[in-house]
Length: 193
Image (cartoon, rainbow, N blue to C red; front, side):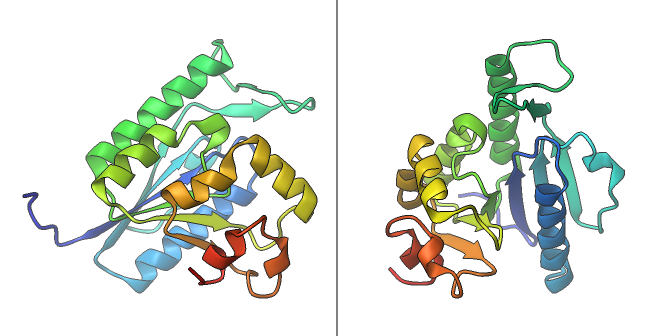
């Protein structure tokens, strides 16, 4: 039996390529969580090249995984390393899984991408599911057009991942925009079974 911990741990994943939206949202969530619970620590996994430029409250830290950037044609490339994108994603995936294994979070929050960038979170999701760790998908309050989102999530095999891995889906605008969620996702996002 694992020793009982006095402090709870939250792991947040954000695939961040270059923009500020994901990083700002994850940082705000982390700060809100530690402000509300003094026994809580939050670790953010991020590919943002500028995450180290931000101030973080006590009990919030980050692990910077190798960065990627999205080109105009929609493809991703390694931001600074002169290696293939598949090698970069394998490295990111390994860092994330090993971090989760050691940090042993009490809950995982994944920002926007149910399986991470090109499925890079799947090994971490499998590890934490086997441990019984609750997992939450966090979605921004304004998503894409419903048809575009459904098409994107189908292409990324994201919809089966919702039932396979996630206990809850958190969104600020869920009740106002329930028809925006693909298929049966709304029931999980809005509190139904």
